[in-house]
Length: 158
Image (cartoon, rainbow, N blue to C red; front, side, top):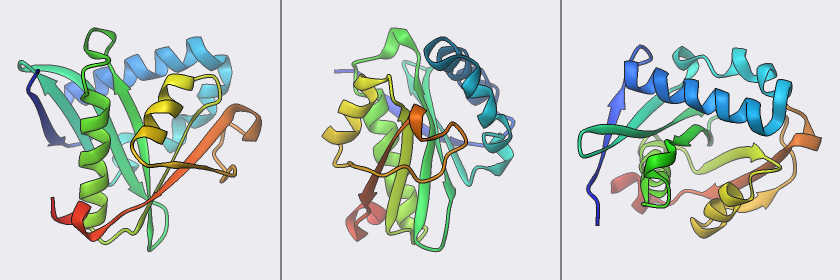
């Protein structure tokens, strides 16, 4: 079993920026030019919380959340470097983001992923998210699968 350390980071954190660069490259391979529509929405300074997951001191993955409305936080920028996949890093990041959003008073988390990323969708289902209708991301409904989860008080206290 590996030890995963989750750290809050600021918008200028080099590990976070390097990981989101890899994420953007990955999405370009998966969905092509459509991912460029997201750039203005993914500025790290617009995110309310950013996290980096480390394994053995190495940056392994990242994630963030941002406020959508008084009750809803959107989980964004989930990415795990290929060498660290299938080791629980994404699950640990998503749980930490859920806990932090709940601790900040949000009752609901939403997220979206590319329609072609079945492995991501399977993970979100496993973590208790349910698929919902398209909620307006810049990529367009034809490219997205959207999910939501009710956040519990326990998540905010963890």
